[in-house]
Image 1: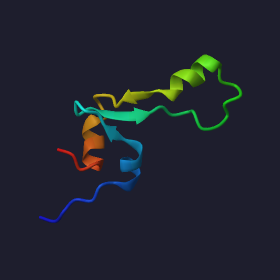
Image 2: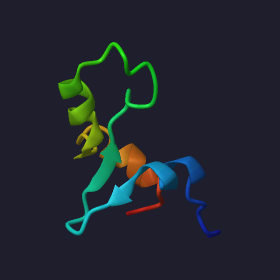
Image 3: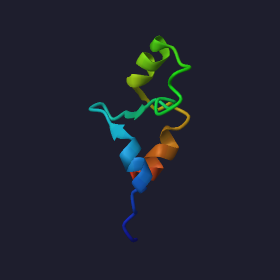
Image 4: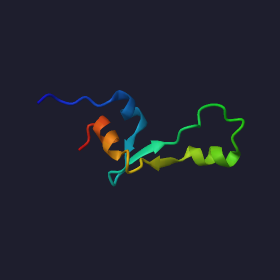
Length: 65
């Protein structure tokens, strides 16, 4: 069986935590920031964990079992 290739876009966007969860950045923080409140922008800064519904797909892209 040949080696699997990791999806290049996914490896730039996701990272594993120590406990094995997958963390991601929030969307909507790159442009059109003038109409967003300070609180909104501040809360979008932090990392979060990938939702349980998407974990299987992301692991497949990252070639993680």
